[in-house]
Image (cartoon, helix red, strand yellow):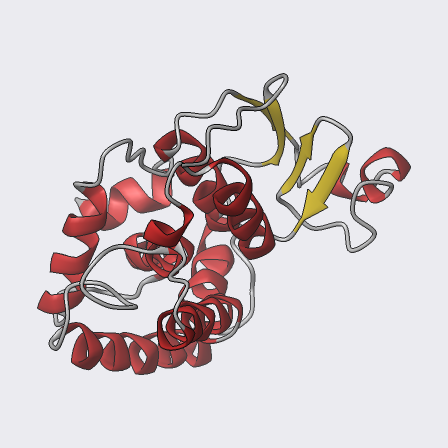
Length: 216
Protein backbone atom coordinates (compact mmCIF):
# COMPACT_ATOMS: atom_id res chain seq x y z
CA UNK A 1 0.00 0.00 0.00
CA UNK A 2 1.25 3.48 -0.91
CA UNK A 3 1.47 5.60 2.25
CA UNK A 4 3.31 8.62 0.82
CA UNK A 5 2.03 12.10 1.69
CA UNK A 6 3.10 15.54 0.45
CA UNK A 7 5.73 17.23 2.60
CA UNK A 8 3.66 20.43 2.30
CA UNK A 9 0.40 21.30 0.54
CA UNK A 10 0.50 20.86 -3.22
CA UNK A 11 0.09 24.16 -5.07
CA UNK A 12 -2.57 24.03 -7.80
CA UNK A 13 -2.41 26.87 -10.31
CA UNK A 14 -5.51 27.43 -12.41
CA UNK A 15 -8.99 28.86 -12.51
CA UNK A 16 -12.22 27.54 -11.03
CA UNK A 17 -13.89 27.91 -14.44
CA UNK A 18 -11.63 25.29 -16.04
CA UNK A 19 -12.71 21.68 -16.31
CA UNK A 20 -9.05 20.73 -16.75
CA UNK A 21 -8.31 22.30 -13.38
CA UNK A 22 -11.41 20.75 -11.82
CA UNK A 23 -10.33 17.21 -12.70
CA UNK A 24 -7.09 17.75 -10.74
CA UNK A 25 -8.85 19.42 -7.81
CA UNK A 26 -11.41 16.60 -7.79
CA UNK A 27 -8.74 13.90 -7.62
CA UNK A 28 -6.73 15.76 -4.98
CA UNK A 29 -9.88 15.89 -2.87
CA UNK A 30 -10.72 12.25 -3.48
CA UNK A 31 -7.24 11.26 -2.35
CA UNK A 32 -7.54 13.50 0.71
CA UNK A 33 -4.34 15.38 -0.17
CA UNK A 34 -3.57 18.85 1.21
CA UNK A 35 -3.42 21.48 -1.51
CA UNK A 36 -3.52 25.22 -2.06
CA UNK A 37 -5.59 26.74 -4.85
CA UNK A 38 -3.80 29.58 -6.65
CA UNK A 39 -6.41 31.28 -8.81
CA UNK A 40 -5.21 32.91 -12.04
CA UNK A 41 -7.18 35.60 -13.87
CA UNK A 42 -7.17 34.35 -17.44
CA UNK A 43 -8.80 37.56 -18.71
CA UNK A 44 -5.76 39.45 -17.42
CA UNK A 45 -3.53 36.82 -19.06
CA UNK A 46 -1.93 35.86 -15.78
CA UNK A 47 -1.17 32.54 -17.45
CA UNK A 48 1.13 34.38 -19.87
CA UNK A 49 3.35 36.15 -17.38
CA UNK A 50 7.07 35.27 -17.33
CA UNK A 51 6.59 33.77 -13.86
CA UNK A 52 3.87 31.40 -15.01
CA UNK A 53 5.56 30.55 -18.32
CA UNK A 54 8.55 29.44 -16.29
CA UNK A 55 6.22 26.77 -14.86
CA UNK A 56 4.61 25.85 -18.19
CA UNK A 57 5.92 27.21 -21.47
CA UNK A 58 2.58 26.42 -23.11
CA UNK A 59 0.87 28.89 -20.77
CA UNK A 60 -1.88 26.41 -19.97
CA UNK A 61 -3.54 25.46 -16.69
CA UNK A 62 -3.46 23.47 -14.52
CA UNK A 63 0.04 23.32 -13.14
CA UNK A 64 0.98 21.80 -9.81
CA UNK A 65 4.00 22.29 -7.60
CA UNK A 66 4.70 19.38 -5.29
CA UNK A 67 7.83 20.15 -3.36
CA UNK A 68 10.60 20.53 -5.94
CA UNK A 69 8.45 19.11 -8.75
CA UNK A 70 6.56 21.34 -11.19
CA UNK A 71 4.18 19.47 -13.49
CA UNK A 72 1.71 20.62 -16.14
CA UNK A 73 -1.09 18.93 -18.13
CA UNK A 74 -4.17 17.74 -16.28
CA UNK A 75 -4.04 14.11 -17.42
CA UNK A 76 -0.32 13.85 -16.67
CA UNK A 77 -0.99 15.30 -13.23
CA UNK A 78 -3.71 12.69 -12.60
CA UNK A 79 -1.28 9.90 -13.48
CA UNK A 80 1.39 11.40 -11.23
CA UNK A 81 -0.90 11.90 -8.23
CA UNK A 82 -2.23 8.37 -8.56
CA UNK A 83 1.19 6.74 -8.79
CA UNK A 84 2.71 8.94 -6.09
CA UNK A 85 -0.05 9.19 -3.51
CA UNK A 86 -2.97 6.83 -4.08
CA UNK A 87 -3.14 4.04 -1.46
CA UNK A 88 -4.30 1.75 -4.28
CA UNK A 89 -2.93 3.01 -7.63
CA UNK A 90 -4.39 0.08 -9.57
CA UNK A 91 -7.85 1.15 -8.43
CA UNK A 92 -7.67 4.30 -10.59
CA UNK A 93 -5.21 3.15 -13.27
CA UNK A 94 -5.52 -0.57 -14.04
CA UNK A 95 -2.20 -2.40 -14.31
CA UNK A 96 -3.29 -4.96 -16.89
CA UNK A 97 -2.62 -4.17 -20.54
CA UNK A 98 -6.27 -3.87 -21.60
CA UNK A 99 -7.37 -1.86 -18.58
CA UNK A 100 -4.50 0.61 -18.90
CA UNK A 101 -5.18 0.97 -22.62
CA UNK A 102 -8.86 1.70 -21.98
CA UNK A 103 -7.96 4.54 -19.60
CA UNK A 104 -5.49 5.95 -22.12
CA UNK A 105 -8.17 5.79 -24.79
CA UNK A 106 -10.42 8.04 -22.70
CA UNK A 107 -7.52 10.38 -21.91
CA UNK A 108 -7.29 10.84 -25.67
CA UNK A 109 -11.03 11.53 -25.83
CA UNK A 110 -10.64 14.14 -23.08
CA UNK A 111 -7.82 15.83 -25.01
CA UNK A 112 -9.60 15.59 -28.37
CA UNK A 113 -13.37 15.27 -28.93
CA UNK A 114 -14.22 16.53 -25.43
CA UNK A 115 -11.89 19.54 -25.62
CA UNK A 116 -13.00 20.50 -29.12
CA UNK A 117 -16.68 19.77 -28.50
CA UNK A 118 -18.37 20.44 -25.14
CA UNK A 119 -15.42 22.31 -23.63
CA UNK A 120 -15.04 24.61 -26.64
CA UNK A 121 -18.80 25.29 -26.89
CA UNK A 122 -18.86 26.19 -23.19
CA UNK A 123 -15.90 28.58 -23.52
CA UNK A 124 -17.65 30.38 -26.38
CA UNK A 125 -20.76 30.88 -24.25
CA UNK A 126 -18.91 31.86 -21.06
CA UNK A 127 -16.80 34.50 -22.74
CA UNK A 128 -19.38 35.66 -25.27
CA UNK A 129 -17.22 34.88 -28.30
CA UNK A 130 -18.71 36.09 -31.55
CA UNK A 131 -17.96 32.95 -33.57
CA UNK A 132 -20.74 30.57 -34.60
CA UNK A 133 -20.86 27.72 -32.03
CA UNK A 134 -22.87 25.32 -34.22
CA UNK A 135 -19.85 23.24 -35.26
CA UNK A 136 -18.81 22.79 -31.61
CA UNK A 137 -22.35 21.85 -30.63
CA UNK A 138 -22.54 19.30 -33.45
CA UNK A 139 -19.22 17.79 -32.36
CA UNK A 140 -20.52 17.65 -28.81
CA UNK A 141 -23.60 15.66 -29.73
CA UNK A 142 -21.49 13.27 -31.84
CA UNK A 143 -19.34 12.60 -28.78
CA UNK A 144 -22.30 12.25 -26.44
CA UNK A 145 -23.93 9.76 -28.80
CA UNK A 146 -20.79 7.60 -28.65
CA UNK A 147 -20.64 7.89 -24.87
CA UNK A 148 -24.32 7.04 -24.57
CA UNK A 149 -23.87 3.83 -26.57
CA UNK A 150 -20.71 2.94 -24.64
CA UNK A 151 -22.26 3.56 -21.21
CA UNK A 152 -25.24 1.43 -22.12
CA UNK A 153 -22.84 -1.52 -21.86
CA UNK A 154 -20.98 -0.67 -18.63
CA UNK A 155 -21.30 1.75 -15.70
CA UNK A 156 -18.01 3.62 -16.11
CA UNK A 157 -15.93 4.65 -19.10
CA UNK A 158 -13.12 2.11 -18.73
CA UNK A 159 -15.04 -0.72 -17.12
CA UNK A 160 -17.14 -1.72 -14.12
CA UNK A 161 -15.42 0.66 -11.66
CA UNK A 162 -14.44 4.33 -11.77
CA UNK A 163 -10.93 5.12 -13.03
CA UNK A 164 -8.94 8.18 -14.02
CA UNK A 165 -10.84 8.03 -17.31
CA UNK A 166 -14.00 9.15 -15.52
CA UNK A 167 -12.17 11.88 -13.57
CA UNK A 168 -10.71 13.23 -16.82
CA UNK A 169 -14.00 13.37 -18.72
CA UNK A 170 -16.54 14.29 -16.05
CA UNK A 171 -16.51 18.08 -15.77
CA UNK A 172 -16.97 19.15 -19.38
CA UNK A 173 -19.72 16.60 -19.92
CA UNK A 174 -21.53 17.66 -16.74
CA UNK A 175 -21.27 21.31 -17.77
CA UNK A 176 -22.05 20.79 -21.46
CA UNK A 177 -25.42 22.61 -21.07
CA UNK A 178 -23.42 25.80 -20.39
CA UNK A 179 -22.45 25.60 -24.06
CA UNK A 180 -26.04 25.01 -25.25
CA UNK A 181 -25.43 21.26 -25.45
CA UNK A 182 -28.43 19.56 -23.85
CA UNK A 183 -28.02 16.25 -22.04
CA UNK A 184 -31.73 15.50 -22.19
CA UNK A 185 -31.41 12.76 -24.79
CA UNK A 186 -28.58 10.92 -23.06
CA UNK A 187 -29.98 9.02 -20.09
CA UNK A 188 -26.99 6.68 -19.72
CA UNK A 189 -24.59 9.63 -19.76
CA UNK A 190 -26.63 11.35 -17.04
CA UNK A 191 -26.63 8.15 -14.96
CA UNK A 192 -22.86 7.96 -15.36
CA UNK A 193 -22.51 11.56 -14.17
CA UNK A 194 -24.57 10.69 -11.10
CA UNK A 195 -22.34 7.69 -10.37
CA UNK A 196 -19.24 9.90 -10.52
CA UNK A 197 -20.92 12.46 -8.27
CA UNK A 198 -21.65 9.69 -5.73
CA UNK A 199 -17.96 8.76 -5.38
CA UNK A 200 -16.40 9.51 -1.95
CA UNK A 201 -14.74 12.91 -1.88
CA UNK A 202 -16.55 14.27 -4.94
CA UNK A 203 -16.59 18.06 -5.29
CA UNK A 204 -18.49 19.86 -8.07
CA UNK A 205 -17.10 22.43 -10.46
CA UNK A 206 -18.31 25.97 -9.88
CA UNK A 207 -21.58 26.93 -11.53
CA UNK A 208 -21.38 30.02 -13.71
CA UNK A 209 -24.27 32.43 -14.42
CA UNK A 210 -24.52 30.79 -17.85
CA UNK A 211 -24.68 27.38 -16.21
CA UNK A 212 -27.32 28.44 -13.70
CA UNK A 213 -29.43 29.83 -16.53
CA UNK A 214 -29.04 26.60 -18.48
CA UNK A 215 -30.21 24.59 -15.49
CA UNK A 216 -33.25 26.79 -14.84
